[in-house]
Length: 269
Image 1 (cartoon, rainbow, N blue to C red):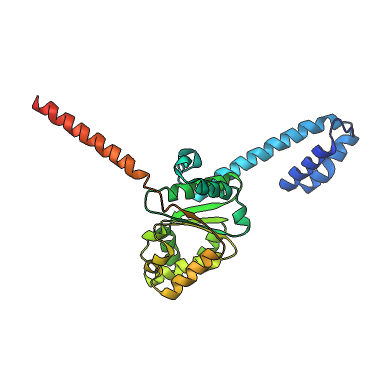
Image 2: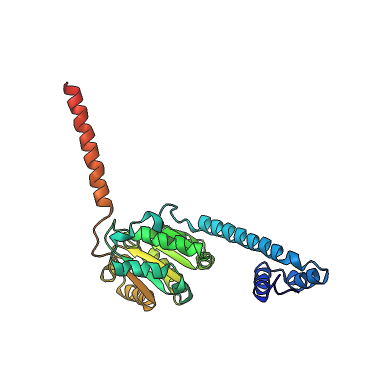
């Protein structure tokens, strides 16, 4: 084989792709047979085609994971004004989208008042992680709780937990809005305990930890939940930010008032 035609780097890349495609026989025979038959000049073209196949597979996988994730399609970093966040918070977000925290099974906890961008940032992190090949599931906390509660009633809770376990990251949005019954608190805690030190959770909440007794009711359960979440966690504080939605709402109301005023003036002329 001519080194100028197909060097060791390209040969290694061919190996990597064929392992990725799960084609061990092709990997063992292709280069050797083409070279022996005098077709080594075709190897770069073959490698190029394999690269195209790998790219197409990655794109299809990302599309499948996006559909399964239930992530809001418009909630990405591109549609969020990061300049409105403190620099330290931006730095944490940019670090999280690399996905290293998933390897450590760390959790991400987002705290702040309604409208400050917690859910948008949580979804944006999810989108970036999927682009990097990680599976994500996004849902309001109450939906997950009701799903688990129904599974428990049907004696299928372990199967439901395994379904969530298939995702590298589960995003529980708006935990603070959930006022749990004892049964609901139990299944929520069970999910947290099952993923502890194995898989990551990302939680958004308008309640700080000292208020979580509103969610779990029982002080011991509250303490146990907080302990498991914080043990390996990155905390994103939105506490000092004003609502991003408030200015938009004020603008919309101003436009409506202006329109009403114009209508009144028209009617009196």
